[in-house]
Length: 151
Image 1 (cartoon, rainbow, N blue to C red):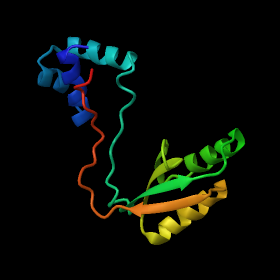
Image 2: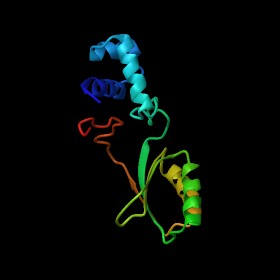
Image 3: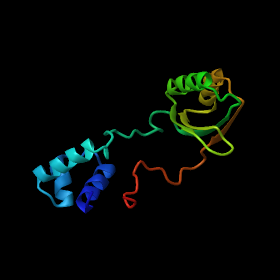
Image 4: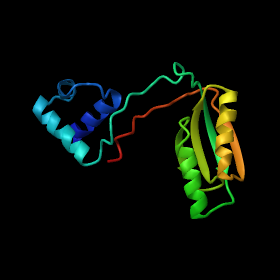
């Protein structure tokens, strides 16, 4: 991993729709050399995929919510059921098993409180001990770009 690879990764994080020629021009490489490096970065697992970011508001999903979950169930059967339920709910866009006070933290997007209530009713099928929601009032920073300074 050298500076050119990092520049390629940063360029792709900023705009993955750029052609190989456009990426090559931005980082100062020939198209062929850039394409080879991009292929190698993918093969080595630095690039996991390419996605299109959508506007939540335009999709009527303007209410982000973080859902804290505590459970008194810590067995494999419960875990499998919980994972099945949360992965099947399209509005849930992130699920994290946590250390500390919480067992799980979910990130979801819903249109409104009625949408959250419908989501909540799906979640409680997992036999949860405590569910608490925090609604986003203002987004100060939200990015998909990862820092490349720790490699």
